[in-house]
Image 1 (cartoon, each protein chain N blue to C red):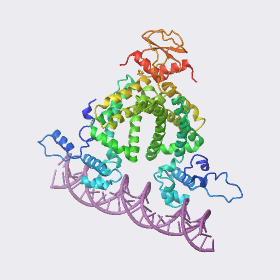
Image 2 (image 1 turned 45 degrees about the vertical axis):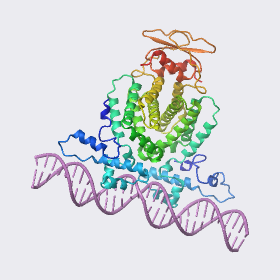
Image 3 (image 1 turned 90 degrees about the vertical axis):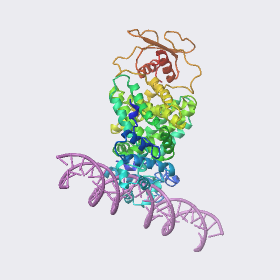
Image 4 (image 1 turned 90 degrees about the horizontal axis):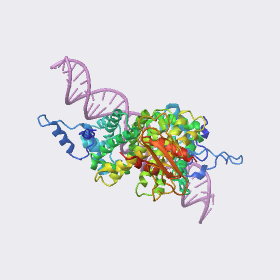
Length: 270
Length: 270
DNA sequence: TTTACAGAGGGTACTGAGTGCCATAATCTC
DNA sequence: GAGATTATGGCACTCAGTACCCTCTGTAAA
């Protein structure tokens, strides 16, 4: 996944003044007369600046367009709502996630959605300062929190949709798809929040990897749809067959998550 | 539909002064002149009727108060937003869930939050017709979907908060708490939706029980915090000790969720 | 009875988000 | 350059939500 294309240029730049424009112009080269920055970006920057300065609610759309030097009507041409200006890059990220999953090679479905979730992480990590500022803003503005929920929900549904396709709709396919998708999103967000709360220092990958590992431990790396015939399971030693087997012994009443962890350890993590 | 039962009894009362209309139904004794229905309920009914008749967006607050025969200002005294009138009972349900978890006896934490989730189910099941109509309405109105997300999120955070308290904040306590809470909510909602999509016929408990069972299988019924010493696990038959043990055999590469299911089956479901 | 108080409800005017419609400027195409 | 297309601005409107102030009613103290 080409990370550089994730947040390239137009979308995620927070830096208040000209960083974005600079980047654009160097990309364009000096031979052409400076093309003016795209309005969507100008608006997003003006909006974000104002939100930081005087708060989200105390900033009106008129304030934003005044600072951006454009007409009020234009704002709503680029952002369906004031909240959207705070998350200008999720639409693109969502599209990228969809594309990524569409190119899934049919291997481990849980691994695939975990990797898909990491796309979101990288979008955040591409602009630590912006991400942290937005995180703080979002935490204290109920309207933004609600908006963010709806965005997260779309990621979750994208993941669930993919898993549903892999698991099949019949039986518990849909159920497992939704629960796993919710787990992946929750784990991802846990790791991401850890990084955001720390101020965006260091590498967020580690925390998210760790969190997603827990989900994969629990939900395993199932290959393709569920096999038609269940596995031999008993209170004794039997269950021969071709291929390697693992034998797991544990006390009854052991917490399942830990049992699973141990099985994973025995099988050997990838 | 029996709109009079829409908000009956213990569900919808979250009025500024609950005592006023507390037992209005039982206070309908003949000696007292009929006390007029509580305004909150009148408003909720008028609103819901109109939403069904002409849609949520095409119904204004003025329409609602006109039908209810009250002043416009009164609407916002009882509902902070138009959306709230569609979910008049979640506040109470949330309080009930909090109360339930506070009375947790310290047993199985995952089981406790599963049971807590069932409180929500029962709220829906108490008014099948209303729940189904609201479900259909919510599905096609983006604003209501978003609103519902914020409600669901509060349930999830309530569950996660309880699990965090049980698991401890250190280590992976917070992570596990959030992932399990998300799983429980997703599973619950999956079962609930199944019932709602079916038109509210029959008993929703079965579907939700089944869905939650999956979560419990995976996350086990851990007792209290994680035990200090891990369990014996190996690629052979050893691991003796006091108490019963289970021995599980499975192919490598088996989907973990299925392995877990089989272990649960072997152990014997509660 | 009068007065004081409190709480429920109503009315009015305001802010601000979001939309529809149309005019105009910029850009593209032939 | 004519004509078509697209980007932008301006204006007016609807409607949710809020602030402020009003009336009405019931109650309790004086």
